Image 1: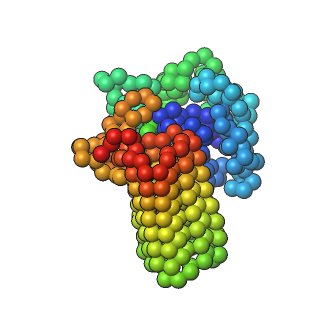
Image 2: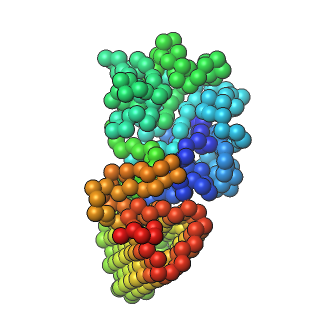
Image 3: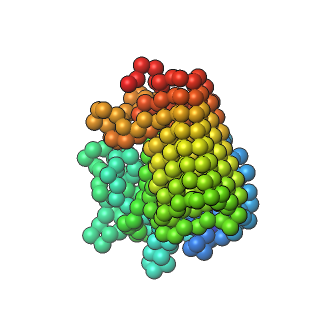
Length: 399
């Protein structure tokens, strides 16, 4: 069986991080969405994958190539215009000869292997299968209604308030090759419902963690969910520990990292290859530091994602924040992470969004340059390649 992965979609609301990469390449917890998907697909025995790529698709090709590095054979199909999921699937129909194929939306993450659950149910039933899960935001996803035997009764792609059910599609299917014919005549939800009426569609209920982030601050939730699966430390033998270093919990550190005296690292957390951590740094749980980063003296990092090639100047605090690649913080930068009001609001391109969070730091795009002694208000957001001079309270006039 081959797998079809649709990587050209999603991420419209994940500004500023999808201004320079596809959603599936967003780094979280020592991986990215697409790599996590591919590894889990390989674990269930699938060896051949077709990936539909779109905007920034060259990043996918450059990162995964032919798939040899992770033990897969990968072919790519480019969808130059964002004409939807239906067209993306139909573009690939000549790549599939088997009676069934696996269809995957890789812009969500799960704790555990959701694809194994789908594959096991298919193996025992021999019928088409759709993974479903429970979420408290069912209105954002395709709603699924079930029969008493837990087979799927009906799929509603964009449910009204009256149509919202307990379960939603969670982005993994095993479908017959005849699905391509259905899809050539009707839309995705209509094709699924036609399959329900014809051969039936079995539900594979996923009861472990599952997240499909719709907003940039929700990347922190994905990072935490994946790190919560870690239960052992893994420090590469090439790591240089220059003095007394305190470790606690599942700490993952890649090759050629240097850590200076007096640093405390509390897991779960991750430090990418070729990074440098200065004296007296405090790295608190759920921190992910991407490769080739430099963390200066006395810095405190807490529940944050630094996507890589970042520089954090001495005596700075980065908390509950997401930071893009190649971003530089001057010394003494503070990302305040708690507002006086009930929840923190973020000014997105679409308007002011209430995060519902009591704690949130900053959302900082790729390539930003931030001068020394800056203070960022909770929920601050910086577009890609912004430049902030020193001694600023951002945004201007915030408390």
